[in-house]
Image 1: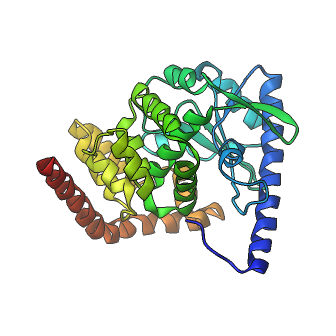
Image 2: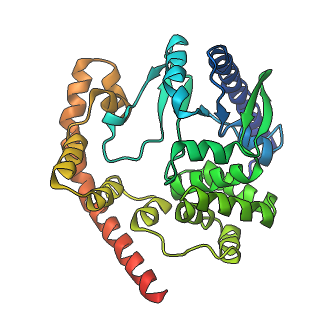
Amino acid sequence: MSRTHDPATEFVLRMRARRMRSRVDAVSAEVLRELGEHGVGPLLLKGPAITSLLYPADSARSYQDVDLLVRPPEYETAERCLARLGFTKTLDDSDVPGSEVAGHPWQRPAGDLVDLHWTLSEVGADPAEVWDALTERKRILRVDGVEVEAPGVAASALIVALHAAHHGTAVDHPLEDLARAVDRFDPPTWARAAELAERLRATRTFTSGLTLDPAGERLARELDLPTNLSTLLRLKRGSPPRGAVTMEVLALTSGAGTRFRIAGRKLVPTRRFMRTWFPRSRRSNFWLAVGYLWRPLWLALAAGPAFRAWRRAHHSRAGSSRSA
């Protein structure tokens, strides 16, 4: 959420945010030019696509990566473009079994980050439907001198709410974006966003995100959005202990073999996952081995708090269902 700072601190934060935005925008322009040269026309999901709607140009709101959505048939071409620019995929589907994957993160040694999506997280619609819905009323932005398409205002409202639902109360920036969007966008815009959510089979996720803001909760009642959220959404709304979400994923997974595969990969992750989860493992094989030895102990320590949070979420849902 937004915080009040003294003028000197606020000035420093604004300057720091401006430098960060400038750097990420330069990376965006570089990637967009490369994609354009190879016939890929992406959609800019966040970054300037959101801040241009919600924040003044000199705000202290920044962004750290480039979020792009591409048509599924163009995804492999887009990956090759990123590889040519020196990016490496930091996580793949096989690294996170049981998790919903909507795209892959890519990074360069200098720290430049690109999230390349073929769909949105936690929507039930086909990726082609997602693309069609988000590009119906698209806007044109200029990022560091390069034109790029971005979702329209209602679609951006949907993205803000879904982003808040994904992070819950654990991350400040999505909540601040949500508060500003609820304050700035009029009820007809939110009604269109709700229609898009229904079309993409993401109504409950949309509701979960929107109701994280007090004014958004009132808006959700006016829009007559559903209140019976799943246990998974209830867990994600807060700051659940590590492992609580995995417990619900395992509970929802059918087939003992699939559950065993997910649990086994959580216990013994891929090297690529370990380098993200335990950054010291990037230094050498010694630290990678240390990470693998630490992983089972870390899971054991996390199991108790995770189980209690999972049980509370189940009881909360059961109580809500009875009251409804």
